Length: 274
Image 1 (cartoon, one colour):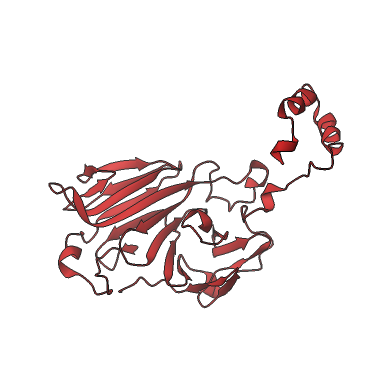
Image 2 (cartoon, one colour):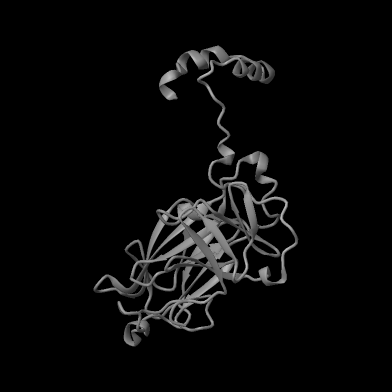
């Protein structure tokens, strides 16, 4: 407990110690000082010892369902967003009852924008639309802008510049790889650059209960929405895997992961209304 520790005295006591002396010093700490292995809190760190991936796990797109909320997973380094069905993420407007709204949806271009992670780890958003996109209140007219890890962005798709509003609003957050250095070597090779972008979450701000995640290396679901489980999703060449504390496995359609107070159902990639 923090109140039991005299921090100044502790720091003074370890000043100038070698690593071996420091280990011996900590071993003699009072009983109320208990070592806490932070690595086992939550589900950080890639899953290890996975069996060979089954054939049904070999996919670049999946859907996770928690109750009525869906999270669509994509492993693409570059994802296309737009109204047409050939986009990686199809963006359309719906009313409160879930019926498609044709006229507002037409304000979203067939291929409206792309989100990319470069080989260097940099993330960029490029507007490719006729109507434009608002990013944090700034109108993008077929421009490309960078997106930094640990930052939130508000995206207005199908923007009306004069009214300064859009037919569809989303929030985007870029996540940074925070796997501790000693265990970073277990991250999927070729997919992860430590301290760089490891995933991106797009959340709809309307009543449609689905979000979109670009999993470039991994994503911690508890960071995506309040109340979501401490379950991490990892991208491997064979497909997506999951880890929750010391449990792990492959993700594939019709799989089900038992969670405290519920379950995570894995489904084939299917967006609402399509």
